[in-house]
Length: 241
Image (cartoon, rainbow, N blue to C red; front, side, top):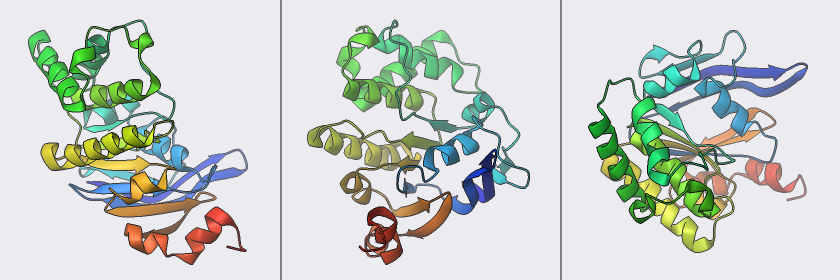
């Protein structure tokens, strides 16, 4: 579904993402981990059109080269993301927020009625149906993260990129979130590419883990393989680990 080859992003003399290669197949949940500053969010931004990667970088989604496409064009092709710092419209209701995903996150020309159906469906799936008419600014952070996920779901994505969606949540909220991520794949057929620092959350749900360190891909494998990889341990804990 997603193929990334020789992806490179520089900021002046700093190489933030250094010739990274990987693929994500249909129906996969793939985790992306690494120390702070490893280049994880920059990688997401370079895939989704927020940043323009360097010449020679290749990003293919469903067989189409998307490197030169605008962010909204990429989203309308079915590659949708959430953000590390939630970006919701606080002055709008929960339902109105999700409607934006239904109306503007797809290349289909859908009616107002169909958009409303998609929004209600997404809210019910995520567990926010009872909050639909609340003003978004009054929600706690956990529910704002759920809302951002519901808005993404309303756009009918094929691949969903999640950027540290579990940060700041309680253990119970994290358990609910990981269950929702599994259901996105199992019940809706949505592939997931997920940045996370909470290891228990991502290790328990991902099929594969990719590890970045200083902009380079350090390792890739199953959660068990990554957990036992000495190079990964050293990247997180130092050479004395």
